[in-house]
Image 1 (cartoon, rainbow, N blue to C red):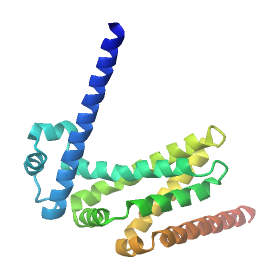
Image 2: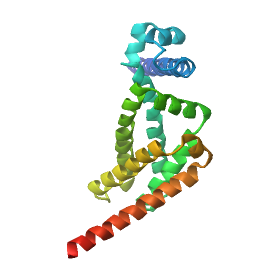
Image 3: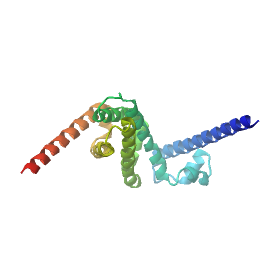
Image 4: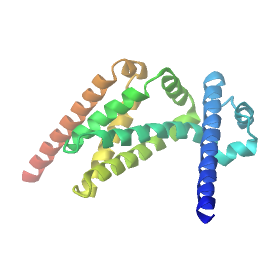
Length: 214
């Protein structure tokens, strides 16, 4: 009897978790649809709750603010990046791992909806200010993925620096790049960014070495 009761509890817990996930997804999808149709500022929490068939309180059970809906959508890129790092060959150099993982993640993330959401973020001051937090999360996710992949064989400081440099370059590129152009040539864009980044770092290192010998 005890064993069957425990199994039933596990099944119930699984059902509850699934229902929460489905409700969260329904709220998120409804919100993003309204944001793209009406604009972020013109969409209220009441609008989102009605479209998702939940109460206003139900919305706040899953998202503290409207901005958090967009942030949660952006977090999916971090999940994809971490998975792409884990999928790279075991003996591949971390620099190559980062370049290939970023390329794969960006290509996978490009679709009409993501491009529209990027435009929404760019055109909405509240989202643009919050958008900077995305890169801090990405840096942490990349560092964690690289650390897990290294299995204790690499200096944690080195891994954190690599993650910081790579995501910092991605942030700057995101501010400079034309999103529509990137969507047409994502692999070429990431390759160009990586080549430029590592070349500049090498030149900085050479310059620093020269200064030390003077």
